[in-house]
Image (cartoon, rainbow, N blue to C red; front, top):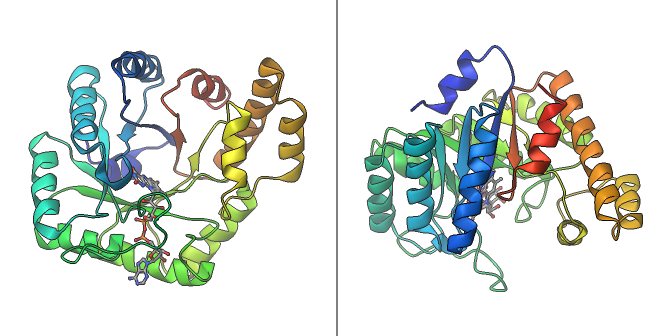
Length: 289
Ligand SMILES: Cc1cc2nc3c(=O)[nH]c(=O)nc-3n(C[C@H](O)[C@H](O)[C@H](O)COP(=O)(O)OP(=O)(O)OC[C@H]3O[C@@H](n4cnc5c(N)ncnc54)[C@H](O)[C@@H]3O)c2cc1C
């Protein structure tokens, strides 16, 4: 299996990658395997598997990465967060991930459990992803490392500029490429790229895109302070929220245009937040390749 940074370096065309989460039920697992089978046909550069809040899916995340590599021959990237864990446990888990032949890791701080407010580091752990990456490097784990980034700033940062200064530290520590939080405003993304270039960040920054399939997802994003949804798009979806077919058509139209614009502006790849569904991503991809 490949190191993802080599894929970005060697690819002459933009790459596509897909994100999944570990299902909670057996039915969900069967459905996910069908989704991976469908999306495999699109020849993804890699797929990634999220790490449940507070490490709640640790074993499943690792197992799923391993299964996808063995059964589907797709390079995987394992998500990993250091919330609530100390150095010893982190080292043990990373050793397990390495032993499964997983070469790519997105190293994240993670969020505190829902409703518990501010992030509090484990007494023997790390305050942010940069410290986690420094640890991974110091312990000589050979992973290709990615980091998260936030075109509309991370909620804990007072300003976007502060956040970008911290992002530079994360890249200097060893993050070889970055994947963004989902966003709907390409303008914000391009402004972000400009600012990251100004501070000397030169690693690939891959937009994370989510095709919206239901109005409840929109309700969720509306609640997020750091995710602007263009007014017209929001109004269109609101009008169509009870018409499943038209809603999906309008929503995917937006995502297709958003991705076409990103590709026209020379990005190195798109990472799709699939929510374990294949149809919407396939529909969007039809218009991109
Ligand atoms: C692509 C992507 C995938 C994700 N996958 C998962 C997942 O699988 N599971 C999950 O639970 N969560 C996931 N998340 C969410 C993520 O865990 C949260 O957004 C979390 O709040 C921040 O993690 P981070 O690694 O991006 O943070 P960090 O890079 O650590 O940043 C967090 C905050 O600390 C600040 N900071 C960073 N470094 C420093 C420093 N040196 N000094 C001072 N301040 C600093 C930053 O500016 C920011 O405000 C993902 C996010 C992204 C973008």
